[in-house]
Amino acid sequence: MIPRYTREKMGKIWKDEYKYQTWLEVELAACQSMAAHGIVPQDIPNRLLKKNWQLGAEDVRAIEEIEAQTRHDVIAFLTHVERTMGPDARWLHLGMTSSDVLDTSFGLLLKRACDLMLFDLDELISSVKNQARIHQHTLMVGRTHGIHAEPTTLGLVMSIWYQELVRHKKRMQAAQQSVAVGKLSGAVGTFAHLPPEVEADVCMKLGLSPASVSNQVVQRDRHAELFTVLANLGATMEKIAVTIRHLQRTEVGEASEPFGEKQKGSSAMPHKKNPIGSENITGVARLLRSYAMAALENVALWHERDISHSSVERIIAPDATILTDYALARLTRIIDGLVVRPDRMKENLELTHGLVFSQTVLLALVRAGMERQGAYSLVQRNAMSCWDTGESFEQLLLKDKDVVDVLGEQGVKKCFDLKDLLGRVDMIMRRVFK
Image (cartoon, rainbow, N blue to C red; front, side, top):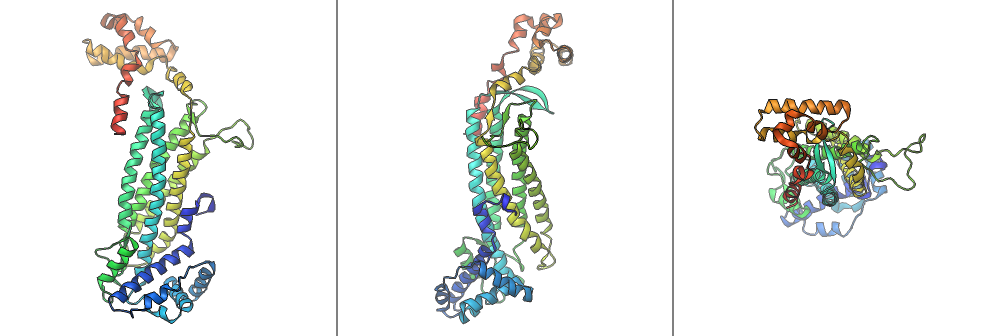
């Protein structure tokens, strides 16, 4: 992923130095277990661990030089390790195949990446919850099809975001468990050259679960689950971002992203304040969806394994986790600094001259004894007149003898009480934040 979207902690996980260090972590853990089971000499792990080898940029360059000749990254890595750590390193990788190292370390990297993303997601959840509480009673018009519907509150809108994000947290936790697995079962998963106890020891030491059955690789439905969760989370972040983008439109003007003191909106038009953060998140969500599709394509490998998945994962694993980490942090900043304009919300609520109460009038007529379709036609007749003339919906109804004969003047006026429409908001919020 390009540096523009890479935050330090997540970026570090996917650096080559860290990847090779994780490979070494797996190899040393396996060597320790093999020594405990009498497969390698007892003193080998301690002698290797005393090296306390930390890989750096020079090691990466050396491995790459070897790989240019061998065309095999794990062999290049092991060759460099043996050259660096000496003859004792020949006991590493005993009875193992490349994917024992690659897939076990991949599970470890994805687990650590999930830890960071879950932390970010908690931050966003907390931010949304806080704003939902603050704006629990901030009146605004609800919109369906982009058209004014009935009154709602900004807090209620945000409570939907909150609960959706909480569901994503549960999904990510489950997906983390699904990918946090390792395997040291050999070339086709039969444990032909290592006992399963070594696999169990290594996975326990690394905080992973051993795959109960594998071929040469950990099965890719596990990884597809995680990338699908990230795509789904991205869709929710986009949903939030699109709402903010709409609310920031000049014609709406109900809320907007924070705008820095020295920030510029346009190279040509100094007046511009553009929702660039939310638009950025919309773009990120598109990428996350594409990575999910790529991960699903990786599930079907030939027989016990091919490497068609490898090139895909080298790209989508860092990119998807780095982008998710970035987008979660950016959206949190937007929510924390969201500029809300209750006065403008009130203006927009009143923009249709009371039409947002049309259902209340319809139901009042039905309850008073009118047949529903007749009542609907009566209300719609006055509503269309309101659209056309801009006259108050309430006044039009009060001038309509057919309506007044059924409801009376006080009955008509009672239909325009906001408290009746929003009287259960507190109950809904209690249900959400129980």
